[in-house]
Image (tube, helix red, strand yellow):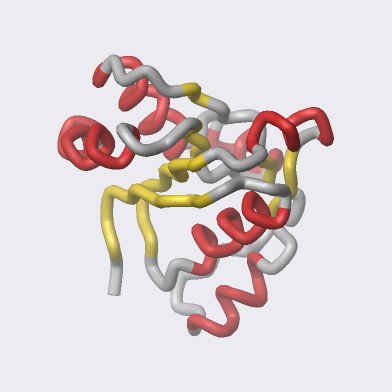
Length: 137
């Protein structure tokens, strides 16, 4: 997956300051033992050798949302509303006015990416872009 994302990553990362994967809630992470979005982002940063900071711990998912398979756009947006926050207040100056590139595996309605972006922008990020492997309609 990351190999196919690499050309798009290079183009987007050229304009970005930080790469942040969409985080999993800690209970889901403990169950899975990995965050697929973080692994994609990590590979992309390492293999493309782009000079960009990988910041997987800047954003956390504080709300354990149920699986959103089959939910409408409105219900998905409701599920992820206030689901993310900065991991620590010390992160705020590190994202101030930065262009952040979010990485996720799959996007359906965009509710999760939107919620992450809103959180980062509210914390002072200059702009947010997103790269996903697949878009499901």
